Amino acid sequence: MRRPGALSLDFRADSFDHPSGLVDAGTVIGWIDKVAYAVAASWSGMHVRARYMGNMQFRRPIPVDTRVTVQGRVVRTHAAAVHVQTRLLLPEILDDDGRPVVSTSSICVYAAEEDGVPQDVPEWIPSTPGQIERNDQARTSSIERRAVEKAMARLPFPDPEPGHDEMVSLAFIAPITEASVGGTVRGGAVMRWLDEAAGVCAARWTGHENVAAVFAGGVRFVRPVQVGDLVRVDALLVNTSERSMHVALRVHAGPRHRKDHRLVAHSISVMVDVTTSGQAGAVPQYTPESDAARRLQESSVELVRLRTEVGSAWSTPEPRVPKAPEARGAVDPTAP
Image 1 (cartoon, rainbow, N blue to C red):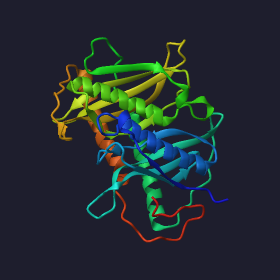
Image 2 (image 1 turned 135 degrees about the vertical axis):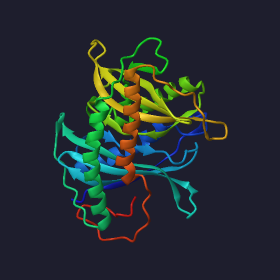
Image 3 (image 1 turned 180 degrees about the horizontal axis):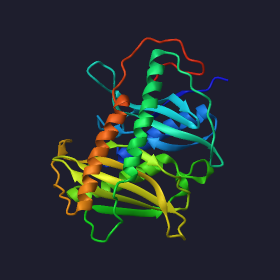
Image 4 (image 1 turned 60 degrees about the vertical axis):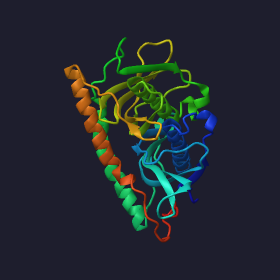
């Protein structure tokens, strides 16, 4: 049986949900997760869980009431893992060549499982030059990404403290509306929570409400969140440049009657203060006041650099190429 290895879905954000006139990164990441999840689940034929969401550099803001197309395709499989390449297009906004603008692109990794036990997935067999190249890129990125994940896990992230001006914590019960198969919370919901916490942290630092992510993703999922769990999202400002803010993020969750909640996911986002002209404005500068804060600042800057290098293979829009013969069980290499 031929398995579907690609999917394209359209989305649109209503203006009443986004009074700023622009779609927030959390909503965008949720769209990408829906498509990537569907591709991975269709290919594996099983329940899949997000393991890693790649870096997303937003090259073009997305206006509300604009049609958005998210495309995803399988580029590699290994044991229980399905690697899905995604990109987000704006069909109503054209570039200088008359093609839809690509707002962002990334690689997403999902793991197939049954009753919490990893299950091997059908092998993806690339045959065209483009498919072989993308498979090699995914393999190389996996090796590099593991080094980044280890460095992220070693970040000296402090515990929440009262009066810590650079940190905010959001706490809530994981709602059933975010449930996926098996009663766990969708990866896209966790990423939206991360974006919301980063937005609150950046807004408090700048004193302005209209902030936006220009670099997100790179989310490492350690374990799932169960519906009904008590969730805490910590966001800590760790570095500033003239016009950007680095925010380190961590999610902890567990049963509400227990105190030993465990790490669920972690990431770093880069935020900007959006002016009335739509440009990134100058931000107040952050100066670390302790050795631990300085180590965290240095580590976060290095991690963003490493993540950018790892994700660079997926960040450049691909040129149109003639159709080539399909691989066994594969899809048209020109789509997306």
